[in-house]
Image 1: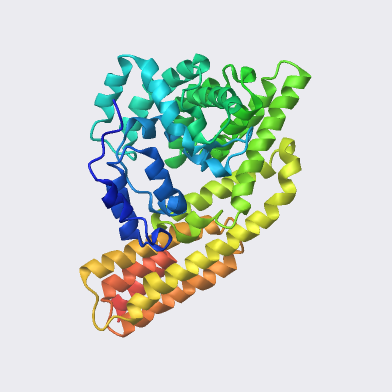
Image 2: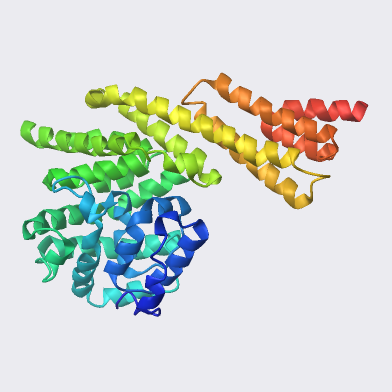
Length: 420
């Protein structure tokens, strides 16, 4: 199987190139609709690399092709080839197509089985990704353990000497990808208990992996499953000698450094500042858990001086996001209404209020609660003024107050209205 032949000619692709950096969300989605039918990876990279940060925020549901499925476990690690350094816990994006060809060629009939699972699927189809990945990723690990470098390896921009260390690191991650995915899915649904069976699968044979591979695994755990961060120090304990334990600890430290480097970067909190409101509270919770896990383990003491500035930066981003959503999502919509709001507008207002409260609840674990109390009071005041102006019916007034200020405040309001 290939990743499908192009259905759009070069002229259609060229027409999308101007203004890429300034493109709005609609144009970005239009570009993706074209590129999802273009099999040339060079074209994809040339157009999409400048806007990868935008794709991370938009989270478009793209077709579940073989290469995309193969590298889903590596998604937080992938960088442009120009941003890759040998030995660092990162994967240069330029190697994805040649590595996928190696894996595909070595799979035999299993490739057809995977094709059937992912047919017509999207990359956000959780069941299809999990089902197909459980077959594909361990097979990929076995294939890459012994496969020689492809003939076109130098076209990736990497040297021939880079192939074997990268292939070994990829194999180490693929070997544990089903278990890493289980941890990440558990984190996403707020599971109270870490999947012990998955953790044992990750630990199995890990002392035999390279430092770079262990650093990649550490970075994936911290980024996707921070509640399972204790696994990292269990990994250190698997060392069979003092030197081996020290080597694994160095790898874990490199993984932690890479994650903290990302948070310290100018766009380290872009998802919180600009991502979809429904997901922002989850991301804040993930980051605060990560910082707490690092801060709570003496083995990570070397990283502690970096945590306070990161936490202060996170608090500022959270407050700015809550303030913006209160202003634009509630206050401006209510003050700008010329008459009673419709049912559709009320539904949107309630949805916005719920997401603000979710973000507020997560953000209070980072900064001073009094600052968030002030922002919520501004939202409540706007709702009360809108009700007094006839913009909200009494029941719609009560429902918004209940979301923003709690059931007691709503009950008091309702009781007062009923008595009146």
